[in-house]
Every structure is written in C-alpha cells, then in structure tokens.
Amino acid sequence: MDGLFILGGSTYYTLLLLKSLKAQNLLRSFSRIAVFGRNPERLDLIATAGGELVDHQVPIIATDRIEDCLDPSYTIIFNQMRMGGLDARDKDEKAAIAARMPADETIGIVGASNAIRTIKGLAPFAEALRAKQSPYTFLNFTNPCSIVCQYLTERLDAQVIGICDYPAFMRREIANKMGVQAQMVSLDYFGLNHFGFIHGVQIDGREVLADVIAAKPSFMPDCNRYFSTLLNISWSFVFENERLVEKQSSKPNRANTLLDIEQQCDVLLASKETDAQAYLGILAQRNCDWYDLAVSPVLGHLTGETSEQVFVNCDAGDALNLGCEHSIIEASSTIDPKKVVFDVVPSPIETLPEYMLVRLMKQAELKLLEGIVEGDPDTVIEACLLNPMIRSLDKTTDYFGELQKIDPIMARFWESGS
Image (tube, rainbow, N blue to C red; front, side):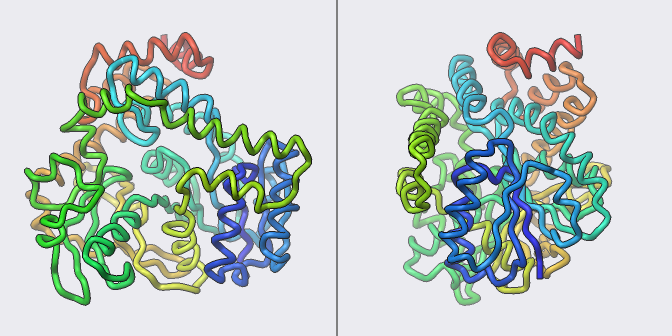
C-alpha cells in the first residue's frame, strides 16, 4: 500500500482533502498519511480532527521534519505549500490592480511574482527530496502550477504531475449545459495551466464541440466568438485586459476574502476547537470542491482505484517544438499507477492561433524560470514582456517596484541581481 506525504499539511483545507478521500473510497489505498508543516498547532489539529473525520481508517501523522518523506513507504508526495501565505498573495493582487493589470496568482503578472516566491521557497525542499532513493510520484497542487512542475521535473528523479481543477470544472459545466452526467463527457484539452483550450467534446462518442460553443457555457470568455475552439476563462487576460481590471477594482480582492476565512479558522483553533465539522463549516464559505473534482481522481488513478478521464500537467518532452528536453503541458490524459499518458494531439491544432499563443506562453514561462533560477531580474522582465498576458514594460516595472517596497523576498531578489 502507498503512503501519502502532504507538504503544506497544516492548511485547514487539508481537512477537505481527507473528506474527499473518504467520500471517494480512497483511504483504503493508503497505509498512512503524513501531514508536514511549520505550524505545530495547526498540524496537531489536522492530525487529531482529521483522524476523527476519516473514522481512523488510516493513521494520520503530524511532522515538521521534511526528512521523514524519505521513508520508502511514502510513494506519493503531495504538495500544497503556499510560499508567503495569503498575505503575500494579498500584496501581489493589490499591486497588480494599482499597476492596472489583472490579478491572478497563477498567470499574468501575479503569476510571475508568485513564481519567484514559490520556486525560491521550494528550492530547499527539492534539495531534500533529491536524497529520496525509493520510487515516488510528486503531485503538485500549488500555484503557479505549470512553472513549478517545470522546475521540479528538471530537478527531481521522480514523475512530477501537476493538478488543476479548471479543466474538470469546464467538463462539469459542459455536462450541466448539455443536460448529461459529467461521466458521459470526454474532452480533448491542450495547453498550459490556466491557459488551455478544448478542441473536441464527445458525448457518448459523438462530437459536439460546435453545439457546446453555441450553448455558451458559463466559463466561456467573450473573446471566444473569434476562435473555433473552446477557451478557458483565462484567455480574457489577453483580450479583455482593461475590462478585467475594472471589474477587479470594484470589489475586495480574492486574497482578502481568503484571509478572512483563514482568520475565522484561527479563532476556532485558539478556542481549542477540535471538531472537523466546525472548520468545514467555515471553509464552506468558499466553493472549494477542487479536491473532489481534480485531486482525488488523480490519486485514484495512481492507486489503481479509478479510471475516469483526468487533466494533468506533466512532462511531454519537446511537445511544443521549442528545442527543450522537458516541456510541461496540460492535457487530457490517462494514468496508470506509474505513468502518465497524454491523449494524442492531432497535428491540425498546430496551425491554430490558440496553439501559437500557448507556444508563446511556454516560451515566456521557460524564460521566467531561467531568470528565477539564475537570480536575474532583467531576464524576469524580459519574460514578462514576452508573456501575452503582460507585455507592458511600464506596468511591469511599476508592479515589481511596488513589491520591492512591501515584500522583503522581492526586495532581496532584485538586490541580488543589481
């Protein structure tokens, strides 16, 4: 049986992961679950309340020692660490709006600063994992997923898989729009994390992409009318930039809302509450079904329990013909317990403008990773100018200039390259 080691296990959302594993009958696949984190009070809560939540079907162990994951029983390492916490996300989002750029922690300008913080923060953990001699799969569920997976694939002797709920959400929304069960819908999906497109939809084996586009599912951006495929909502960052800024400026930013939820849970923790249901009640303020939608299905594949279609970020070699050994793409896939197999991508999509933009975005991502690893701010700026969601030199320098004033990590990064 597999052992599951959770990096970032002290977040309250780990209770939702445990709840999902129980609901989808996956607990029997694990001999034990370890939750790793740096907050001892929260870790103790997750181990105690989590054990009750899963009816003690599997031992849940709290640890603050990263070296514990080297134990060969841990065949799956699951990462959900948020470097800098929600406070850093809050700073990023506010700085982006002030610079008149849309704010999203995965893509665009906030994705760039989040990548700097996350990759720098992950470096010591990646180094620790290099000592792991037994086979394992690294599952990444932290943002920005695509570049984090790119970084780890190049550094770990393991299969690295990135998980995002966007494609699974799109599949569910399409099913709702077409009046069928999600299990009846199959998608041909290709792109990068939060920047992909659907080039085929099958219901009971019948191709219905044109019908789905005509039905206008809720996630479809306005710019979709000019394309023949079905885009995810993030394409609006390229073509509806100013409108997004106005919309985001008119209400509290996303991180502020999430901070409030976290603080409510902290108040419960301070009161010595150990009932998982009390915390789940607070977390329910956020529509956080991503563990059911995306995480548990992938874990089910890896443990041989399920076979439902999944969408993951994984190494596809030089899939975009950029001359690189490793290239992380997000696509519809099948997974056996040891290997991801991407669905075959038909060559005609390589002539689509959507494909060309994905390719350009990947070039920007590789350039950004180069700048972060080498500690070169100029290369980071170059990557931002290449990114079709950013492009503006003035806005980019304004954004990072503001972050250097309020975020010590950003200040150190820029100083190290000056």
